[in-house]
Amino acid sequence: MALTSKDILGILASFHTAEGIEPLKAGYIQDVAVEPHGDGPKVNIHVTDVWRGAMLTEKDRLALAFFIQNHFPDIKDVRVIPRSREQADTARKIARSPQSPPRTPSATKMIAVVSGKGGVGKSTVSINLARSLAHLGLRTAILDCDIYGFSVPDLLQISDPVQTQNHQFIAPKVQGIEVMSMKFFVDHNAPVMWRGPMLGKAIRQMMEDTLWNNPEYMVLDLPPGTGDIAMDVHDYFPKAVAILITTPDANAAKVAERAGKMARSLDRRLIGVVENMSYMNCPECGYRWFPLGEGGAQSVAESLQIPVLAKVPWVISGESGVRGLVPIDHPAQSIYDQLARDINGLDLVPTAGATTPLIPTHFAVPGKKVPPKPSI
Ligand SMILES: Nc1ncnc2c1ncn2[C@@H]1O[C@H](COP(=O)(O)OP(=O)(O)OP(=O)(O)O)[C@@H](O)[C@H]1O
Ligand SMILES: [Mg+2]
Image (cartoon, rainbow, N blue to C red; front, side):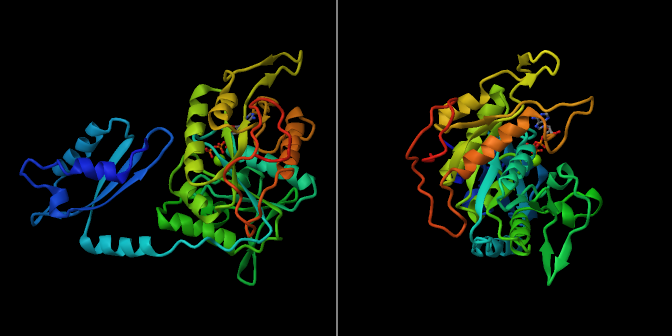
């Protein structure tokens, strides 16, 4: 069972400081948030900054964090954040403002590329899938939802500043793909330091203020994990389907599985799993080996009852490797092309269409080739 703020509040009822202050009873606990993360939940607790007329001490703050951590050893991190009552009121007002979904181009089918673990190839798969969709003659876009760690423009080697027209952004186009990313609005690779509601606003603004050419497909490249941004994307684009990305190793697969379960708990439709860096083929003798082991996608597929959509090999050429788009003559290219055709064969629902049924009507046997229709 996933940890909830109720569990934390339940245990907080028995916490008191060395001086006998009971913060829950005294009304000093403002809110408790549990963020599910791949490697264990993170807990943020806002507390009133003044306890019994004196500023909250570091000792009591740490004691509170330790108390919770001690009761729930699976928690990755507990943060106890002091806040004035005025700040708490303002935050509550912001949190209450309704999160209506952003306006999106009406005929666009959205594909969220998701993984629990970082660095497994979400961005790489996103851009290569987008290129293959564009090669099928489909109007295709990518929204780089990785607000802190944007990488899509670099992978596609876009360096020109974004243009505007009538107060709207014109998405730069590469290989037929329209691209929008935070990178276009951040100078000199400066870090983005927004939190919470601001992150959602960035995604909303990029979506709404871009002059899209009515894309048929939009690939959403998500950041790793299941934090704020992933939740916003789930909220904002409820009809987007998700592809899970894993590498062949058991660790990445476990984390991808957790991310998949979380997405499913939010009614996200999972169309399948892609195993990236699946194997390597020796260019000399054709011998195939598996540097990261085998079976990652298979275990995700079996556990979540979704198909393995593709296994993408390592794409390496020369000493520096290949970053970004796969060379057009590389065998991985045809794997991406097949993936694009399979996805285009599914009955995906455009943003403005009717809700996709959540219950799959057909399960493919993991590991076997998936017939494009009917979809899961
Ligand atoms: N099939 C592949 N063969 C060789 N290198 C790859 C392959 N897929 C991805 N890479 C490399 O692995 C690194 C991570 O890839 P990528 O940035 O796409 O991962 P990510 O999941 O988007 O990462 P993050 O979680 O940081 O957003 C990059 O250097 C990329 O070039
Ligand atoms: Mg990425």
